[in-house]
Length: 101
Image (tube, rainbow, N blue to C red; front, side):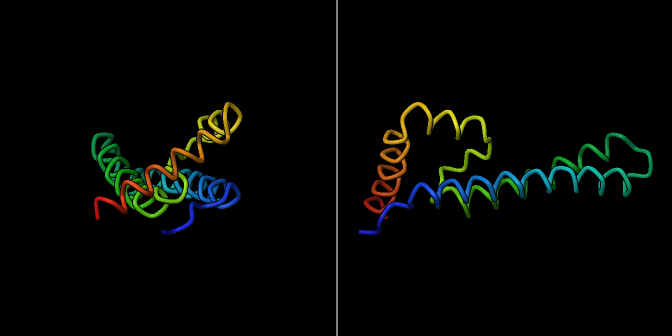
């Protein structure tokens, strides 16, 4: 049975995920604006597709480690309210994934 990620690993995964998501949203907005040629609808579509794609990648990559909140407020609230409950949820998710595999 694989050991659950430590609190430091989960917090690091959340921090990296949040930073990468922020960079992707800002970068995709800049990219979409430059490539759209003034067409707002096309800029929004480009921004949405790029942001959605990176969000899927981040959730699949970091979800098993931290739960993939990518919101520092919700992660902080989870830890502050009950660090044990956060750890138990992560362990339950990991053990249920292993049993279904």
